[in-house]
Image (tube, rainbow, N blue to C red; front, side, top):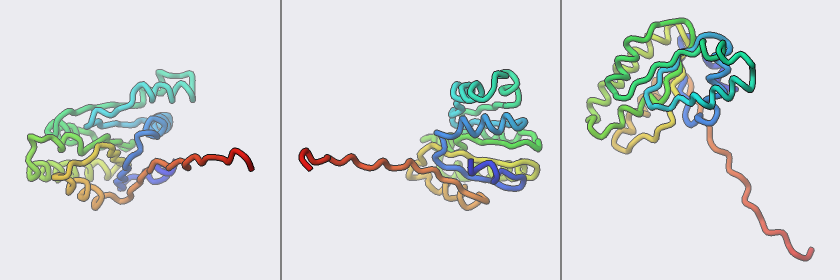
Length: 175
């Protein structure tokens, strides 16, 4: 995976549209050592991770014990989750950080203020550990500036596009 070498302390990596490789990535990182996943968009693929672990090893319990999951469902819970996260030396994966900021009830100025607080805490965590921000949620038109702020702050950006399949062509009946 191209992302693994990029995950280094003091780096914030932004990954867009990687939901199809996320279970394999999380499994690989969990097999290497402890891993903290902070899920802000309810996107943690638990079942697919268990499948990945079973493909690689018969030691399911050992593979899952290294994976620490914390979830938030609102923008303010996400802020609390980031503020209370310990600055451990193992990688931190943040899933859909922008999802709670897309709430219709959250004014764009408040979303911007919260994102500033998110980024301060992410920078604190990045001092000791690699940080990977995985964004799969579509950003609403009125709040697209949030994604721009994330891309401006990221040290490196990975985008996975879906390859287009060649269009089938009709073969001639008689050559």
